[in-house]
Amino acid sequence: MKYKYDPKRIREVLGKKVQFLLGDMACVYGGLLAGCSFFGGYPITPASEVAEGMARRLPRVGGTYIQMEDEIGSMAAVIGAAWGGAKSMTATSGPGFSLMMENYGFAAMTETPCVIVNVQRTGPSTGQPTLGAQGDMMQVRWGTHGDFEALALAPSTVQECMDFTIEAFNLSEKYRNPACVMTDGEVGHLRERIIIPDEKDLKIIDRVTATIDKEKYIPFTNSQTRKSKVPDFATFGTGYRTYVTGLTHNEKGFPATDKQPDHERLVKRITTKITDDADKLVMVEQLNLDDADVAFVTYGATARPAESAMEMGRKNGIKVGLLRLKIVWPFPDKLVTNLAKDVDKIIVPEMNLGQMVHPVREFAENHCEVISAPKIGGEMHLPMELYKYLEGK
Amino acid sequence: MKKDIRVCGFGGQGVILSGFIIGKAASVFMDYHAVQSQSYGPEARGGAARSEIIISDEKIGYPRPIGVDYLVAMSQESFDTYRDDIRDDAVIIVDSDLVKKHDIGRPLYKVQAQKIAEELGNKIVTNIVMVGAFTSIFGLLKTEAVKESVIDSVPKRFTELNIKAFERGLEAGKNAVKEL
Image 1: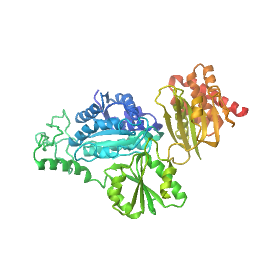
Image 2: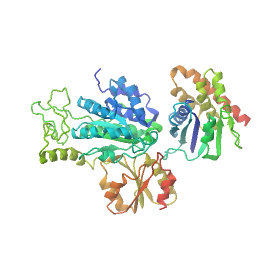
Image 3: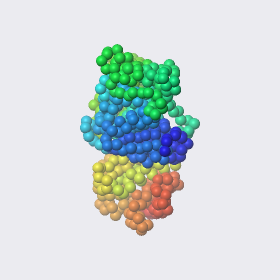
Image 4: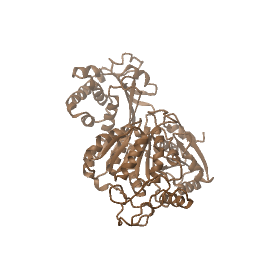
């Protein structure tokens, strides 16, 4: 059966508008609502529920689910599906994400839209399978070799697991770049109320397909139909001639590996197509920052105890605010610089030994003190543990 | 209002489902905010399992309980393991057949949930009997909301059995209150 995006049918399959839902399952809902019609994956705790949810529901909307032999194959299948014209996704956790790194780079280099949900658990290696962490925040940015731009979102609630998976698809389609939903075992395995948007409230972005005369089509250059560095997408079977390779390629897609300008032209275009829009891509929540002397800069699960700690601080007369990054990469550098000018201290709580604290420090540019508040071992920070940082203890 | 609830037992008893039903009743069939989290060992069956729910009329930040207001225990191991951090005034329900050593020097409610489930013909609804007892003893959630949540959460072909189990649980809860 050929997949046709039918939001009415998808809403029927998802069921009631208000549900008490698991974070992982909310990623499934987000994917289906965005028009995902292909899932290639390999189950892994704590992301297995995403695969399970997709396996049950994708066939009911006319999509395809494949359990691959491993995560290398999963990522390859997802890329192939995208070139076959599908919106595609996979879901994994740390060990699988490591295996996906090679093809993650291939997707960036070949400008393949696709979505990876990473329900992070502790590492390195197999770590603590059932427990959450935020240890892959730098891997998503730098884990594959070479120069590329990451698109990564970090949900703090079950609702955001759904919303951000839709957003990841939108960004991925818009920029023809892989996009990652960097959730974690805490939020992925949490249940909360979610409200599923009605058909009319869905904002879905689709890739711009090639429409130009087939003889004039150039597959790897600025769009030929609008002002954009993102090429029009001619997927396989549409009659356009496209050659796809991870080697440095010329505008026609053919390997061009021995001249510096060819590489620079290509990689500058696939990175600046995203960085040119960096200001537009900022997605944050700002709480109590107007008069703040000290601020948490936080993301994902950790934002929750940070918000609780902020409330404790406010009750005790501490002028504390919070900046929550919804999109983590591209990093909102100007916003962080401006915040650093306004406050005396920034605290960065993370369920790792200090990762996002590095770009925060870089862009705080010595305007204020930046403190890392790490916690590892599969447990979230207690609000009291973060409150102590406010008291300077 | 903010209440921290823990339901615990052994893996396979439906501890997670009971927490799911309670959280859903509060946040879908009533207007509270609720989060439910869970912890379990690597074993699929057996071992101590727990499901934790926070119900609040305000947005919930940190999603795990800090201290417990309501404890429901369906196995000795889980009762022994998961009561260190309960509050001094915490209200406790145990299945007195499954938690034989429950004399900890404080009053608690006793419900023979598994026995009632067996009387109904299927031990599998022990957890739903407990959800019923939870509802009438704690008085935190509306009976109708929890009942709707039960119906919404169990397979259709078992609706009737589960409603019976829920209602017997409500009644057992009321009796336990009288006995205390």
